[in-house]
Image: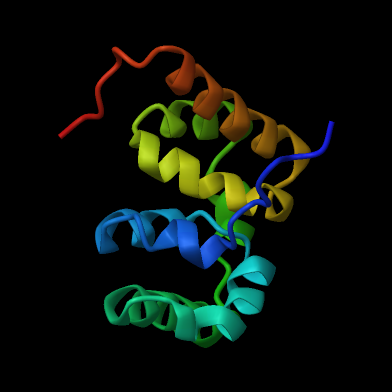
Length: 127
């Protein structure tokens, strides 16, 4: 059954977010989505546009530095799983955009910890 109203463009939906909420959302976007959304940035409010451009510039500037590439040298799979338990839910969500940069075992652990935290909303982030 076709939709009665077409889906709104992403920038229309983004307008309804606070600038901080929008920033947290774009931090979780993969690099390719962040790059393609630059074309429509002129539709966004000024502060949203600045966040989008700053995040894009930051990733371009730090493209040669890949902290995800060092995970396997810093952590064994068991230590990585333990380390993920200290992450905030927001950080776990942002990490989902980088699963493809991790080896399978490490990506599965990150995905599992994120799902666990979503399934148990009463678990609070450590301050």
